[in-house]
Amino acid sequence: MNTVPMESGLILAGILFILGFIGVLVRRNIVFILLSLEVMLNASGLAFIAAGSRWVQADGQVMFIFILAMAAAEVSVGLALILQIFRDFKTLDADAADNMRG
Amino acid sequence: MAIVFYIAALVAVISTVMVITRLNAVHALLYMIVSLLSVAVIFFILGAAFIAALEVIVYAGAIMVLFVFVVMMLNLGPASAEAESRWLNPAGWIGPGILSAVLIVELVYILMTHARQDITSQAVEPRQVGIALYGPYLLGVELAAMLLMAGIVGAYHLGRYKHVILHRYLEKELP
Image (cartoon, rainbow over all chains, first blue to last red):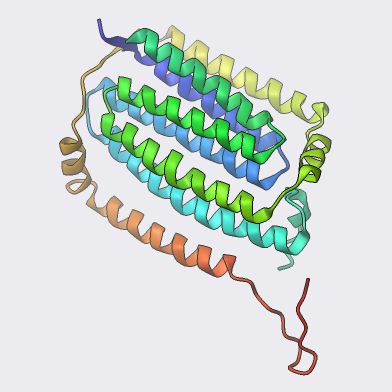
């Protein structure tokens, strides 16, 4: 009775990943691009968890913990970069920093 | 249990759509927290209670608070929302939206034509996760530790305010 089809979990992960992908493609604000990257990482973690609970193995959860650690490191560096870009260019437009002149 | 799963999935999709369409950064962050909480509910239903707790604590707690702090430090006013609505013109949405919709339709088709497999709500204990983490995945844990250390050092170096001093008599603070 307590069953969920694995396809539903994977389709949900796919939908969330595509939504994050659309966010990365269409937004020009760097904060939103970083937020969409978080959506994509979270969706891939959901796929790992769904697979790990389908075969009742711990590996999926281990992978999610690695994704979590990577997301934390990535967000801290990314937000520091956003602060510096805003300080230098006075805008959050990602196109403002197209020629990396320091 | 399946009903709870589908309701949480619907909440996750709706709030994620709201995240990528909001003009105001704080509204998007609040919707993102809702999305993460609903994904945590899904993890709980899939039998990963430990990961559900980690999702709430680390993602919705720590990482989103970091985002909120940065948005506060940027001190964006109503002018930034106006700039957002200028940047977010509908012409930019159409191409990426259609192509991504094609991708998701393909993915759903591939998954639906597969043989149906059910997830029983059999929990994977945190004990098993810990044994796996410090057994076969020990090297990965060490690498994650190094990555976090590099993240701390990198964020410190990048986030520092750098004064540019041309000469000690011409010392001036750049805007």
